[in-house]
Image 1 (spheres, one colour):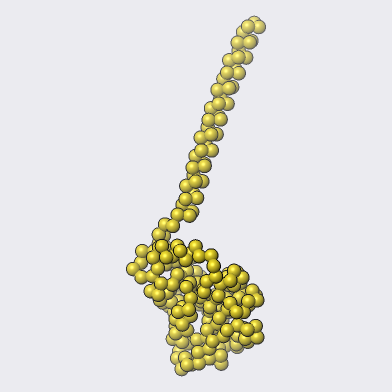
Image 2: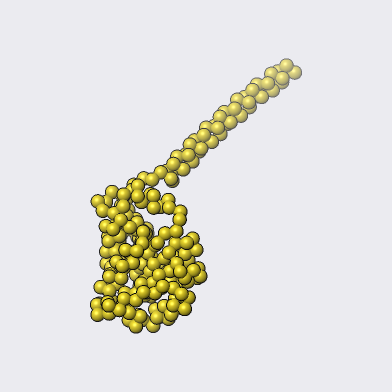
Length: 233
């Protein structure tokens, strides 16, 4: 009986050892697979694939297509994205901008000025006013330029009040009274083109019905300006 008990105990110990070894092997395999997956994820995260934007109706964020005939090449786009120094950036967008979006735009504008970027925008309510407010909070007025589509007197009361704050803070405000005789949409197009000529990057906030800003994105592409569009609808 004693020998039988000892034999059974040894067998059980042997079986337990084999099961433990198999579990250890499985854990090792799982760890290796997980490690390989993480490694691949790192490669996928950083490898500069020539992504294409999705359908324009999907909303969200769209960037220039890498394989378009016009605009920057994938290599040039990657080089600009990797640039760590201060940049001249245009931040422009539609008047029809929900309050929650305005808050996010203010934060983005403030962050860009804080990192040393020179922000260019235009004067109006909605998106551009949010860009101005955010940049003013950074308290570096030399890094904000506001180009008006028409004269100061042509701006609405809210815009005029904000522009006065800009002037008091020392911001470079550039009115274009020569456009007073033009319809506002046409004057805005001229203004946006002037802003675009002074920057290396465009951040546009628009809807899919914003013809002025959709045209501006095409213009940026043709001029080789790196552009990112945030569609608010």
